[in-house]
Structures are given as structure tokens and as C-alpha cells.
Length: 375
Image (tube, rainbow, N blue to C red):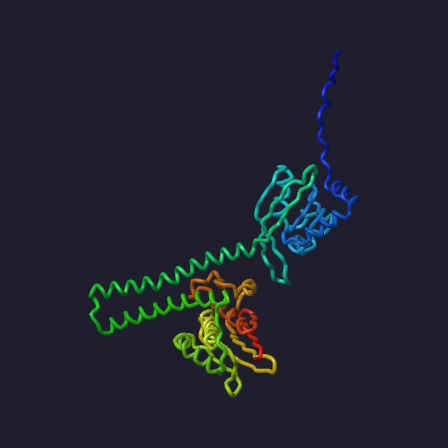
């Protein structure tokens, strides 16, 4: 018996569906769709789905927070948002090439009138299978990028700050070894310079160790009663050379008994030293009005260190307490320091259970306000 074989049928591929059609097919199963949306809203990464015209079909909660202007509302045209231009180019590239695309995009968020926060997102975009749309995932890497840049800046600054005094000390040692200086005023001058720069290196290293202890929770605070005004006066005496150079108008406003508090005097010396020294270094002009005050209430103690100098730029204000951050990168070479001072201040205040806030109007007033609970 002869069997008749029919020719095989040609294999056909389904036509691409639109993303909207694919989404509507899920409506017949509302439970899974709701579950997926709930799960995506819990992720920290932004998830966006758009059609071939870059109209928004879906955006999870994290994505809407990344674009606070309302750009990601349903059916919104993403291409009309100038702030999303980089993202649109990436999505369009994925649509045209039908391939996965990875890139880094920048987005500016308006926090308040005149204040913007630049965010950096790592974006992965790819076509939605069997549709004419594209999805993308946005991961906020702003802090990682900033931390890496701050680390690089710190390495550069610390290397410079340590290399300069080391070079000077090494130079004077070679001069002394050469026998050109036998004694007298020249010998004394060499020793003074070497001592000055060795102290400078010790200060940098001590700052590094202090911030490490405070951030690592290894700082053992000693609680003892001391007079805060006397603490401030000791700091001013220690800063006498800088005060004589800058000639600021100093005002101390404390209770008649000098103001007594319980805390670690060592760290409060560092707090006031960093705040006062920072004000003097950042304001080279003479005649700066510098005021240090303390107020005791039933619930808290309030310390304020304020000046009428150049102030802190608005764009730098949110970051001044971060490790190694230095304001005014364009004039960073004019001031000494590694950017650890204010970070030490903040950690030391918080270690005592207090808070510190910055209020600055450039050219008018800059105030650091510390609030400590009464113990």
C-alpha cells in the first residue's frame, strides 16, 4: 500500500502586536497584572514601557519619582519633555536597532525655585518581544558616581597636602646635611619650618583617624562637665597666628557662668576649631565679623557659629558635611585642607546626640546651628 505524503505547511510567524494590545490581553487576568504592578512598585529601579511613538504606557513608582514633573503620566509623550532628551534618544536607538542598549543619562530635578539636583541614571533599554514597543530600567547611580569622584578628589588633595610639607622637610634636611648651615638664626629657622610642616602632616593624619573612628562607631566618648566658653577661648588661643593675620571682629555670647555642659571636651575642641578655622580660611579679608554663641534652655543647648563672609554657594550647601567635599572647586587651591573638617563636626555632634544645620546667604551671613539635648 502506497502512502501519500502531503507537503509540509509553511511555518508562519505571528505579526508583531502593539504594546497596548499586549497590555489589554492581561486585563482578562487582573490578578497577575495587579501583582506585577505591585511588585514593580516595590523595586528601587525605575521601570518604563513606551510604544513606538514614545508614549508612556507604564511607569512604576520609582520611575515617577525620577521624573517629578509629571512626564510619566499614562499616554504622555515622552519626547515632548526636554529634560528627558537623553533618555528618548536611548529608547529611539533601541527601537530602530531592535537591540538591547545600555548607557548613562543625566536628569535635572527641580527641588525648589532656583535649586536643581542633577541625577545620574544607568539605563538599560530593549524591545518588548513580539510588540512594537520598548522597555527600560533606570538605576540611580548618582551617589556612587559622586562618591567615586570625591574619593579621587581626596586622593589628589591628600597627596598634595602631604607631599608639599614632606618636600620642604626633605629639602631642609638636605641643607643641614650639606653643612652649609652651622648654627645661629639660620639653623633655628630651618628647625621652625620643619616643625611647622610636620605638625601640618600630623593634623591631616589625625583628621583621617578621627573621621574613621566616628563613622566606624569606635569613638569612645567621655562624658564630663566643662565650661563651653573656656573651650572656645582655648580654641581661639590655639588659632592666634591665623587670627592675627585675618584680624576678625570676634564676639563671644555665653551665659555669665561660661555655660556648662556634659560631653567629651576633646571632640568639642575639634568641633569649634574646625568651624572657626574654616570661617577664617574661607574669608581672607580682614575685619570679618565672627560670632560664637551658646544658649541654654530647659530642653536643649543651642550653639551658633556665624560670620558675614562670602558664604557657601547654594549648589554646595547640600554636600558640605560629606567626607572630603570641598566648596568652591575653582578656588580650592587657595585654601588648605582635605575637606574632612565639617564632616568631623557633624559626626562629633551626632555622637553627642545632637544635630547641626547650615544656614547661608552668600555675602550676608553663614551660620552653623548645633542643637544638643540637655542631659
